Image 1 (cartoon, one colour):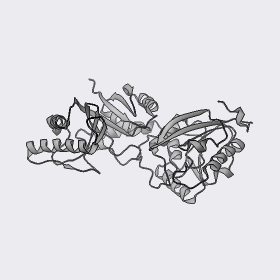
Image 2 (spheres, one colour):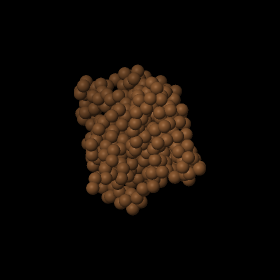
Image 3 (cartoon, one colour):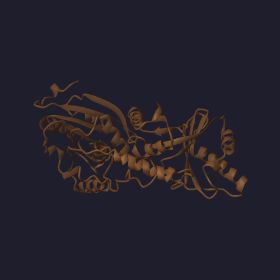
Image 4 (cartoon, one colour):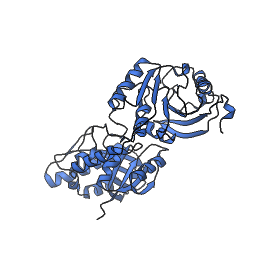
Length: 386
């Protein structure tokens, strides 16, 4: 008997292809790429596995109802007509998240309120009382997505965004989102088959995500919980089996993962977060200024980092980015160096020709993930591939 159903994994702009690849590798069926999302099919166990293992998903939602609407009254009437007792009891709490791409509906809070009223009125009519709303920690989180005149109603199986991995308790200035960090690492081709360096590691997010990729550790193994654990049909035994099976697929890592930061406070925070993720045996964090360092290992080095953009820190950006280029050119042969920046003007001062340039977003900032290939035995940028 086929118990598969359709789900939608939401992601960041530019990560759709790598999320689709992750889903296929996990065993998802009927994978279809959308804009900032990928739809797929699987059973309840696969929904648990997707939440636990996907590195580039922000949310996994389960569509339960779909209909066309003309106006707010139409929306209320069709939400009211649903049998909400399948998902929610009068003693439970709920919350509504709304996403709109419509000329008719332009205020998400108004739509959320209308949906909340319809659900509450339905329960009041049947039971004489209604479930309460809890924005922070509801028993059921309902996702409303309106595209033009079409409405999809889904259950949010994740709860808090999946970038809340559970290991990061300490952050630095402008910390990078964990899903963004994992996606950038995967875009860079990081596979755990070489040494890794983040020379401006901040609170250690790239380091931790790089180690989890290298060791094939489930992305959300340290997370406190998922929304599906409060659902009527939650199967705790099945979930534990999924966790155990996913951990059984972890592998050993035989290279070095190193992080530098010149700020003692950042080094302390990175140490704490690495320890929280139980990855201290794989990761070394040192207080060093990247511009005073050189490559210490033989063979290929994979470097990924997030330098300041000038958004929050008062630096001479042109000089700073020129120093990045000089350090790479003079001291890091045999290195594939990747970094993300939204400061496209400062990027021109690196003085090296990037071999890749990928458009991504860091929160609201349009950015570029750039790659510089530093060849062994050559310190001249002209030898870099175009």
